[in-house]
Image (tube, rainbow, N blue to C red; front, side, top):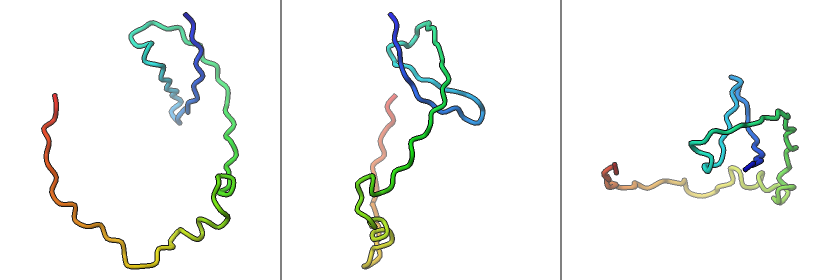
Length: 84
């Protein structure tokens, strides 16, 4: 039974590539073929291209006008026993 899986992954600065396969293959001997093909990152979209109205972030960022926001005391919480 042959399975083909496309996985995109990032190789860190240490040169190590980590690949996770579906759990159906756990505790099994596998033959794996790796094809190295650089991925061109997709161009970043503007907020307008993502569906935001023009000037949305300029209007809302830092735009809170009113009394300061305060997080009230959360009270005590119960301590639960750890399940073994």
